[in-house]
Image (tube, rainbow, N blue to C red; front, side, top):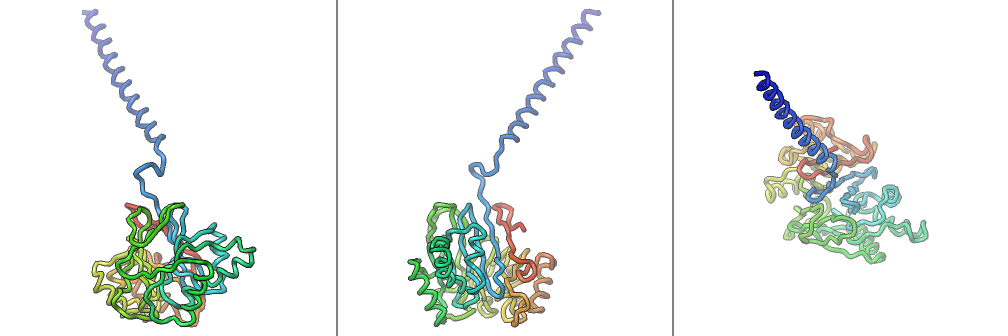
Length: 312
């Protein structure tokens, strides 16, 4: 009897020891697997950054993806646009989109020549390509922009609804309507068949979770929604610096942003952003703490994380 009890105790000890061993082994394997995980491994998509630069009464949006940069509008001239880019380590812009020919949106590009001269011609950021919309006006501003592009041998392409541009990782070469991977932006406005000028002609880019609208006015907002009725954006660049002539309640409700960014100058003479627009944003968003303004907050950066969306 005693011998059987001893045998039973040894058997129990062996079973328990075996279970403990395999449990410990599983714990070690799982722990090592966790330690061996490295962010950015194959199959994980890279995130992008969208920064609304503080350029006073104007608009300049810096896009960043894996060490590459691009610009949607360039702010007004004489506000140190080139210095701001250099301070951020931007030596090359894969492309610049000029939403329309207003000085507070494209004037910063006029600083290219002065920036080159002030640093012996070596500190000027390289602009690889310029995209312009179908703005039928412009006059002196348009002609000046084209002279800058010619002076620095910057290729100029026209962009309108149906086109797509990418911002790829460092060293890649983006082009319109390419199938290459990267941060993709679709042009939703203006359509090719509409002769438009000034604010209503602003190039609208859809980055999937964010929307860049330039100075789009309420009439163009209505037409845009007719063409893109399901348009939505987690992050909205509030049209025309928050002007009451833009930002219809229907447009804001349809896009239903979680975050709103207003590029506006401090104490500007236009009254931007209009109190009525701020009220509408508050109603639509339900949280005024996610409304950001460059006159109050300075440069505003958002991160675009695949599968997650916009993060502030």
